[in-house]
Length: 430
Image 1 (cartoon, one colour):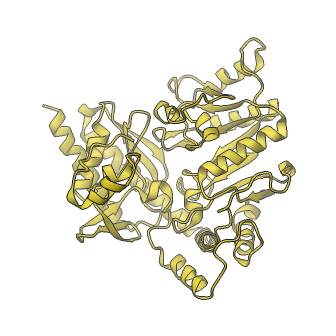
Image 2: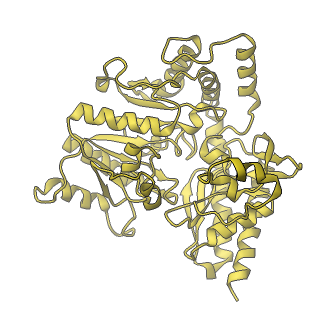
């Protein structure tokens, strides 16, 4: 993400003096936040902001969700275990049982649950290791504009040039293939991929796995069609390649259903979850895989903070949102409203040649003019709306509020987005 907001403000002097230059989001949102509730944040001066960022998709149930917060308070007041490595605790037991009951069983999914560590990158790393261990192969196919994390294995399957450069070493054993729509709607990129696999002269060895996001969030909100996903799955089955779906940002209801691939009708071999699975913004990651793939030796993949019991409590309570189907219906209605409003913004600014992207509450507007999306987000922040950009050139302004966003706040945030686009358009179009 490229940042255009001015960070040189007196209230940020502590961060400028003591925190590393690697900090990023505070440059886009130059204020000190003090309080948050559902879809709103307040800085320490008392100014209110509507949050269309939601912790990069971590806060699907909003800031300080009261139901989840009450469960956490009760757990802490009863001296519940907070840290346990991978020891058995009541909190972990409760989460495992509820996840099986609410998510796996209704979908007929016979998966094991692994706790790889607290972050999405931990989940991706464990998925890549397991795929290579199972197949005995080294190569993994990933996609253009993919983002899977900042550790070396996850960076190797990430497409963003800037982020890959941060590794400082060569990133090996991966091959990047074109994502759905990379060459335009008329080109089926699965045919391109299959040609490489079937041709002994292609230079691409049979991979251990194909890893993909159904909606590429950091890559620019690029949406894979359900047909494309099914064709990728078919390739995996015919060539005995494991299919890994990174549902870290697109999952947990962000696209409408709990898993972003539910409506596509595919069955991944391995699924990566993090971000919103923690329920309250608490660090948690899960790696799910078919039971027959569970060939780990005890301790072969571990981590000190894979036993975050507070996150277990929060995650278990958050799963209750998926029991009745009401949240799914709410997200569907809100998503349709966002689609309508974004398309109105695009139509009312034809000279910008912008385009709406995304599905669910995971949408945005892509601007072909360099720097325009950052200008829009900076303008929005000045008007009391928090948004981020995405894409290899930060060309997309993202709309990603909590799933629990209220109707009034959603409409007000979309009004601010519209006004921000209009303001930037007036500056550029003479």
